[in-house]
Image (cartoon, rainbow, N blue to C red):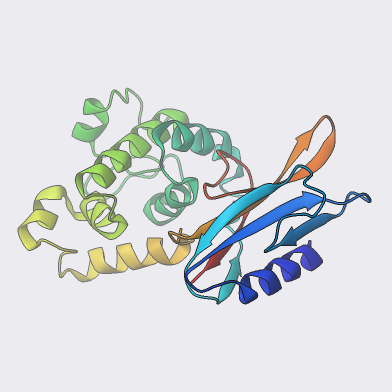
Length: 229
């Protein structure tokens, strides 16, 4: 894994700052080959366009904690179905309730994603203390906010915390210490998804581990993010 990533770093470092094509394939020994040139024998390979400057950065995804593990199936399912980052959902739950499904705030917000009674009712959540229902409702609400604010995560999170009316009143993250701290905590715990990212993960195909690369993350499971600044 380390040697493959090192090869990728070296290849990308030699690529043009304007644009580059990265090619990958398996050699006769089954080893992963990454190059800025296609293979000479014209065999099967994958190719990925990489734009941007020559600097390469590798990061690891937000790793689920022991406390969050029991809710991973619900987080993954509803995040995938709604098209919301599972890492973002985990970070929201951590800050909202520290993964306590019976949490109740002084304002009456309930459960893992701290749904207000009116919001829960609107989203069809009949029992906000039932984890799967709460996550489903919370992800749906987060999705609504992301779409409303053109997928500007900071504004969506500010609205989740302080309300849409407050965000629209100020046209930005409100100048409230609580809300600004809330947004920073979540965005600080959530891996950024740069526009020129390459995602790398492993899949089992016929019982054999296969390395996959794409400009989109997998629907579920762990992955590495290899991107150019």
